[in-house]
Each structure stands twice: as C-alpha cells, then as structure tokens.
Amino acid sequence: MNLVAGKSYFVGDKSTVVRKEASKSSEALNQLIYGDWLMFKGGIDGGWAQIYSRGNLGWIPKSAIQEERVLEVNFVDIGIGDGCHIVTPDDEIILIDAGQTNNMSRFLNWRYNLRKRKVVGVDGVTASDSNTRPPFEIDYVVISHPDKDHYYGFKYLFENKKLAFNKVFHNGILERPRHAASENPNLHYYSSEDLGGWVVLGKKKYLWDTIRESQEMHDLIDLHSSSRKDYLSTLRALKENNPNVVFKGLKESDKYFEKFDDSHNMPIQILGPVTEPVDFEGSTKDCLYRLGSEGETKNGHSVIFRLHLGKLKVFLGGDLNTDSEDYLLKFYAETDKEASDLEHDIAEIEEKGHSITTDEAQELAEHRSDLENIIIKARKHFQVDIAKACHHGSHHFSETFLQCLNSIATVVSSGDGDSYAHPRPDALGSFGKYGRGTRPLIFSTEIGRSTNEFTHVIDYLEEIRKYEEDLKNATSSGDKKEIEDKLEGRKDSNVATYGMITLRTDGEKVFLAQKLEAPRKKSEKWDIHELAYNNELNEFQYVIKH
Image (cartoon, rainbow, N blue to C red; front, side, top):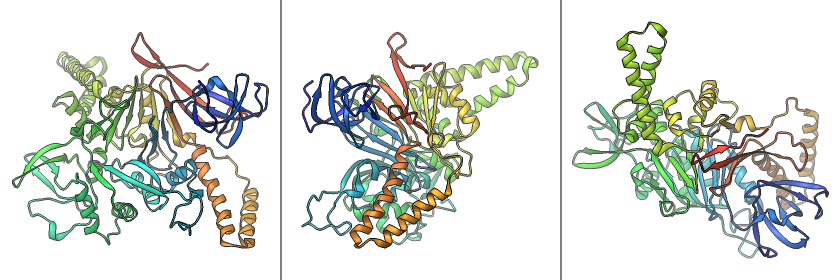
C-alpha cells in the first residue's frame, strides 16, 4: 500500500503504539486501537510511518495501517439511561438514544471538535469570517421509546446550531397532553402522561393514536406548541433548528432500517416494535398491543435492531421487559405459549424435588420441550454475538429471551444516582449464566467509569480559583469564551475517556475495548477483548486472555 501524505487512514491491528521516533525502543506517546483514525504526515523510515492521531504526531509500524474504515459502535457513558453512537464503514453516523443529561452532547463535542467549529450565525460568527463551515450533519437519530432517560439528552443536541439532523426514527408512541377536541368517545386514555387513545377488541387492547408518518408528527408538535411536556419540548427544539427534518415511526413489518436492507453490506433488521392490523370505525391501522401499564407499554415497544456485518451480529435493544419479551417470543416462535409462564411452572415443579408425581414429571417434560422449541425458533431471529442489555440490567427480563440472544458479550448502560440499583445482581448473574461460551463477557459503562476513592479537594479548589481569576482578567469576550471553552472541553474529554465501551469490527476481526481506569503507561491505556470466528463451529468465540 502506497501511503499518500495528508490522507486519512485507520489502525488495522488490534492495537499499536505511537512512538516519538521511528523505533520500537523510542518513547511511547499513546496507544491506538483497531479502527482509530489517523493521518499520514509523509514520513517513511524503514518500516515506520509518520502519522497524526489523538493529538499526537509520531510514528507507528507501516504494517499497522489500513485504508478501510471499520464499524465503530460506542456505548457512551451517558449516566442514567442509554446512548449509543455508531459510525458505519461508509462514515455515516447513527445515534440511538442520548440519555437524560448532556453527556452525549459532550461526547460529540469532543469527538467532532464542535466547540471550535465556526458556523455562521453561531457564537457571533458571520459570513465574512474565515474558515466557516456548515453545521455538522448527523445522518440518523433513533429514539427507541419516549422514556426521559433515553430521549432527553437529545434536547442538548437539537438545540445546538452547530449540528444538523435530517431523519429521526421512533417507535410511534408520542406522549402529549389530552386534546379535548380530538378525543373520541370510543377510545380510552391513560390517566397520566397520555400516549393517545386505545381501543378494546375482545380481550385485547391496542394503541390507536400511534404516529407513523412525518407530517403527523409535525402537525402534533405544532398543535401542542406551548406544551411543557419533556418529549414534546425535545422534538420542538429539533424542529425549530431543523424545520425540514423527516420523522418516521418504525415497526417490525418494515423489515430493515432505511437503506440498510439485505442488499447492503451492513443490514440492520428491525425486530421491534411488532404491530398488529386493527380495524376501528371503518379504518385499518398497524397498532401496538397494550402490554400493561403506560410505562410497560411504551418501554416494551422499544425499537430494537439486529445489525449484521460480515459474520458478526449485534443486538441493539431499548427497555424491553418480561411482558414484551413474552410477546416478541410468541410472535417470532409462532406460539401461543408465554415463556415466563412456562419458566414459572417449571420452577414450581422443580422446587418439589423428588416428591413430584408422575403427572407432574410429564408436565415438567412438556414445559421444558415447549421452551426448547421457542428457543430454537426464536434464535433464528434473535441470536447474536454481542448484545446491548435491555433496560440497563433491570430484573424485568425473561431467562428464555436471554437464551434466544445467546450472546458472547453483553454491554450494560447504567449510571450513578438511579433509584433502581441497575444493573441488578440477578440480571448480571443471568447474563453470565445464559451467555455463550465458557467465559461470557459483561461490560458496564457504570463499572468502567473512573472515580478516585479520595478526591484531593484542595487541588480542585486551586484549579477553580485559577479559572475564576483568568476569567476576571480576560480583556475581551473572545478571550473569556476561550477560557470557558477550555474548561468545558475538559469535561467533554472526561465523558469520552472513561466508562465508554467501544466495539470495533470489520465483520471478521472483532474487538471490544474500554479505557483502563489507571493506565499502566502511555503504551497501555486500553483493556481490549477479542472475538475470533471458529470455522468449525460457525460462530465467534472469546479469545481468552491469560
């Protein structure tokens, strides 16, 4: 490969060390991992190439460089909630949820250097200023469901005029105020945050007022233009800065996410939410089954994907619960039996030990057979190698559903300060118990975050005093903003440094990595885990570290 000065390339090895000089014995500047971006600066010295990456100008082995971008999936430490940043091999950006705080905003500020981006009309920048650029474009946004710890972080992004958004996808459920003029006496309504009307058909209940088309969403945002509801205010911020944004409600019958169909090099299947056709007052719509309470329904009908690249499969879920997992397994396994009921009945019989009757033994065998059939059928749709844990490691899950996922690695997104103790001990135990292989991997953004056991308050106090003094002595608004941006930039990089779990893969090579809380040295900053494909078993396996 002939390297071209000024051109972008990527790290092709599991990891490589940036050296000050073109020698393995030279001072280490940084550790780069598979898929990291770099720029070739033109220098060649033997088998070494001069590059710039992660703020360092140095040398790496030429053999560690490749031209192809790989898939990058970053499970960002957004605190409480979920937030996933994906960069495709074609350099497109997909954001799936953004947590509740501004951590995703800070991550993107750091990743794309947004604080220094000069956009006309922002921070006093005019068209006559030099080096102006258009807003940075985010290709796809997915709001898995309208829970605040998944969508509210988007408000910080949607309000940022240095960012542009073209398409936003959602599960069809919009929380909004009750609007008396549109209420139908034949529809029922939840009593709290309203999800729209629902109809009763026999013993089943369905949400009727789901949103699928873009114009429907635009009209509802306009209708409730003064609403203070968090979801509406988040979408209103999006529309104000991106008036032509396109909304789309996703459902299983769409089969694939946008252009990422079975002809694409990276298909993304839509596994949920699953809808059913409902006839009501002369109209037919694809509706969501009411799973239970308001929270159970909007969580359980989260958008869920299965992403394929090469031989690798990745599950990206929202806040599924036991009821929704039962519902999904019934649909995909084409059965009327609920997995959680079978699990419960099996447990009750097994608790009797040797005292069970012949009839109970027969019943036990039948229940186990029913579960096995569900697992065999559902694995055709759900089995993956890497899974994002649903609902932050909640205890509301089905063991059968975990067996259907059958993943080697599970990534849990959770944060400090939540009142649910996520990830729950039984969830963590089950991720390991039902994971594939002898050593299933469990990653957690919360566990991966670095916090000193003892904070030297005086050190921070001195930094704050210096910051305040610098602001006081700033001679212009530009100098003041530069000082403020420097402090904010430190916060941005902190989000990106610890807690995030990153997946890098071309579909053959697969690495999961997280930053070490205390780097051993500049050449050893990452904890990297490798999956390798076993051609005899036709599946990925964890390469055990010894």
